[in-house]
Image 1 (cartoon, rainbow, N blue to C red):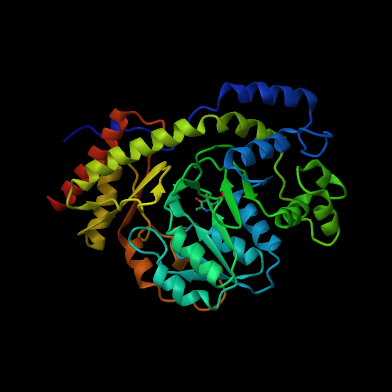
Image 2 (cartoon, rainbow, N blue to C red):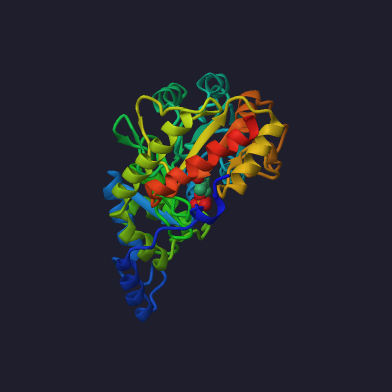
Length: 394
Ligand SMILES: *Cc1c(COP(=O)(O)O)cnc(C)c1O
């Protein structure tokens, strides 16, 4: 047997934060100016918003405490009524339906196919009753945005993009997160840009961003410190609650120098992913679904389906992979998995039968592939997975 364990790469180890962040933090610590609204202008958070909007090609950006906060504010800023029905894919992170519940709306789960993308037929079947579409690009897998945007437009529904894990992903050459009315991104440590925690929303809608700015906690006249149409925000001042979901300057200092790293991370992440995917697809036991034709991915993890494993065999595969030094999550097999819809018991009403999503989750595996991994480390991961499958299947 090969000695896997001793050489296993740490799949949770982060890439170092660029040195420029240290200098910016030192300046900030000397001044003690951690709150985004103390400086009259050009606070690090304000600069980040300007730079991020320019990078995405949107008119506005609003930095907040997390992507979940950005999703919550987006739903609130759309002015939807209490109890509004929000379509979401049944394969996503529990924070997404939670944001809908937090906004006092009703998540309606839509089936997801074995390529991890929303089932357009089920979306079609459910859209007539809905008030909004929140499309979560889970693990950076882009659903068919042409079909989704067309359907939403036909029913006059707003589209929110949960692009938490899709920074750098393109759809037909356009940036994911800029296709819907509003797009939300995460700076949590397991995403392309790592600030520990943090989020940002982007939009071209002046009224939506004005409302979101106020609700994010721009009390009194702090909205004047945003690059937005002042009158819009003034209209909403004191008419909307303050949820205080602001980003602080320290986070912006950690994020800003990473923006320039994004093209390299996206390029390396995609190369690494495709390198591993090609080898896994050589095995009859694994299937890595291809991207959609119009999609250019920006992955930092890999998902693949077990093609011919019983549940017991899938569990054994997970165990052998772990012994080989590579943690594999089978979404539907681990207890209390936050990405398995049957664990979202906080959603009111009866959970619908979602046989497609359930079947997908039973065989869908998840392995982190941080973009910094070397070819040798990627070979190690692939070898550990192929070996584990051999141990099960002989
Ligand atoms: C990480 C993630 C979130 C939550 O982001 P936070 O910044 O941690 O709130 C939501 N949706 C998806 C698809 C994610 O990957």
